[in-house]
Length: 376
Image 1 (cartoon, helix red, strand yellow):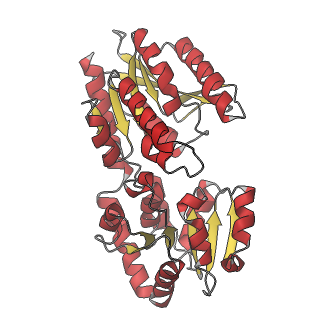
Image 2 (image 1 turned 120 degrees about the vertical axis):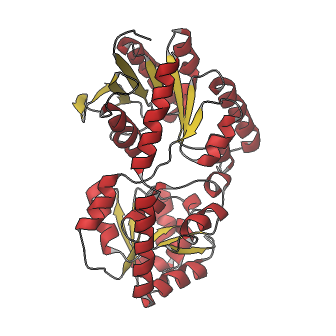
């Protein structure tokens, strides 16, 4: 590492979009605006594909050419990201996609510090791909490959404690940096007291494995609207439109952060009913905490971890995500008991302030970097 008082950090992603909340707003901005980390200042850069090059919130953003297909992205875009990374000549490289692991050891051989950021539990995620042939074999291979590379890196950052525990077995310098809400998301909900409308919301990626088919079916006999915000594949949308519950759905498509906050403030509950796949059961979807931060009671899947977050803190109801009847009953209960819904929302907001917030995770991230820097 350079002996100067400035440490150059490059975050790399070949797959994530511009202004990704975890990568940019949380990790990059937190590091770029931190003061005196191990007696150094941090010069933070971010390499993405197909974005505008600029400096924003003290983060210098670089771009490489974007590919349209996944296969080309995993080869061509990764190669371009590596080339750009070498041009930057950073001290520390922080990798945000599994496909970047094939350049991780190349960076190590250049004498660089390399950190891997596991946003998802990739092997369990692959097991949940219904269309994937030989998924258990492929999952096992990727776990072997991921572990083989990661044990040689300088550190691992994970998005959940479950993923942390898995990587601790191969790399002792592993820490969980959870995707808890930013202070701006919490404060915004304090300042805006929108009148609640007769609707609930689901905001995020829309797919079968996220339980959307059962969710839409739940609205067949409800006098409540569902704000469904996120991109929907055309063939899946055709399937959803056949449901008798679709008549109560507002298909909003992709929305920005401000629109998301407005929708949450107008809804009386937030929905997150992912199906019980291996990668879901032990996950902590950010939308749970975003709903809580906005003062919304959460209707979530009845996984043990989710019940501990939602029901133990008395901030929502957990149900069978494959039961439209149970989903409908939970929505109807909160519709008929607005005082209970309000109390659950207040409980959620309070626990987010106390525990489930980015400020606490930011401190962990900075301390992690301090250890990485001081070790060199």
